Length: 329
Image 1: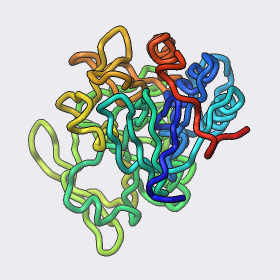
Image 2: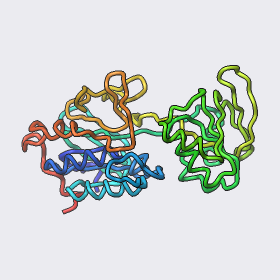
Image 3: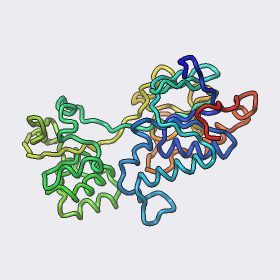
Image 4: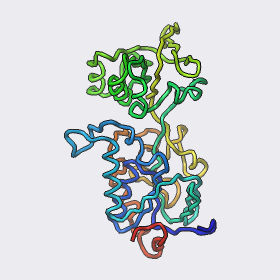
């Protein structure tokens, strides 16, 4: 395709987690033909790394994260959404037509864009963290847990994600120590109790990882007591970080309004941003100064639909016909 070729769309959705696909389902059922730019590597969002989703309505026995995301993708495509597996490298969100450029060199324009960019794993911020990434430091137990059979592992964090990681890692590790900054867990009662009842899990309360040691691969950590400041060494070969997430909004800075933490600000109770024709849903948005609860469930509430599918965006004068390129017949 020529570099000057521009694909004209009715609606572009950036992101393919539960929010992106739910938005695509609503928009497609409202008569639009949304283009979902799903990501080249991270398609499906954080649930692709989740072993079991227990709080999604309609699945009393739970459902595997990847299975759920496959179903959402198929449902979106069934109603006419076009899913492209590529990364967004550039966005221009001002003006009537918004422009989105992908890593594959495709350029798309549309009068409306939904930002469902999701979030990324938060890092510890230690200088050794990146050095040992893939050599003992991980953010994904389901991806890397297998490599730590019969080894001593720590999980850093006190929320549901940390409890899920720790519980999963007991399938492989000789021992799993959960390092918690405070004297109590932030996790839900059921997740906390499940971890506490597991005989292979122990807790390092009021502790923080302040240094990572190793020679080519991790051999241990320094734990600092968050109350007394005293330090101690602990021999481990695996460190799994589960301390929360940060919004993936780097490309949006300077265009859509963000809060101090990088979350997209929306005008409650809608999902409208400060830019006309630009909407947000999922893990990357916030209302005023309070971030909403973010359970692993469809993160595109129905209020998104009237915003995007109002006559302003769906009349022939507002929306061009979908581009013939990259669309299924």
